[in-house]
Length: 306
Image 1 (cartoon, rainbow, N blue to C red):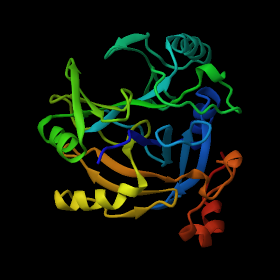
Image 2 (image 1 turned 135 degrees about the vertical axis):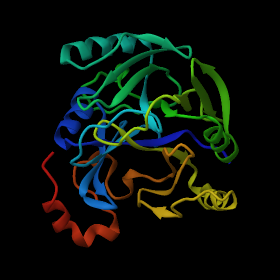
Image 3 (image 1 turned 45 degrees about the vertical axis):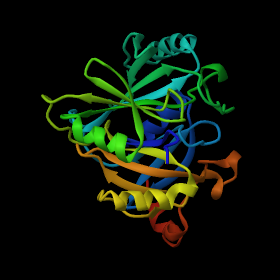
Image 4 (image 1 turned 180 degrees about the vertical axis):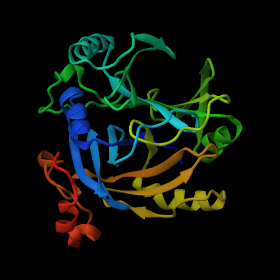
């Protein structure tokens, strides 16, 4: 069983309206699902993705009234977002300068040009020039089609020691070591293209991160719907403590922590975000899974206006 790449990455915001403005108006992503955290219905769960909400293109946010993340190890430290080519990086560099977005200089990393930047809460992001995979343009984006973000790229995490994490990535999750630059080790998901890379930086001197706004909650990996039961059995057979089956309605999930404490999710590629909304109406209303529908009035009353 192989992973198909990333499914989504979920981060934390303390400012849902500002978050919505940045990821739609500045980055040009589409809000494909406006829902709530199913374990804490007082919090939004906002999904931003490409034009059709394809798995592997969405960065999502829980809206919690918390302070800023304290950066450190045992955490995801940067989220890659793919654009088509280096010309797009130059376009984005000019856009960020005009809009006052904090950014670094374009640099080469692992053989690809990269533009690192941050959102207003300090969420660490990077645009990577790589045209692998299919592009689903969003016609409503303020970003021209040729420069739109195409999906998730390499995701980087930090650990104090590599051995346990390496065992989980290679033996449990069937990733392949694909080189190293500096103290960062690259792992690739077979059959998913060069952009499906998890990068693990070894930082033994850093203190553990403390989760907060501007930080990452978990990273989700894409699995075929047909393989869900087999992955459930695999986790049990390898005695990996995990959540057990969780039905999120738009996909099915399994959660577990790798040895350094970073939360991983295995999420299915189906049924998808168009299960309860037409494709052209994604994200336009508050979507709730069926088991929360009876509480809609109460839930809506507790949410802020985006």
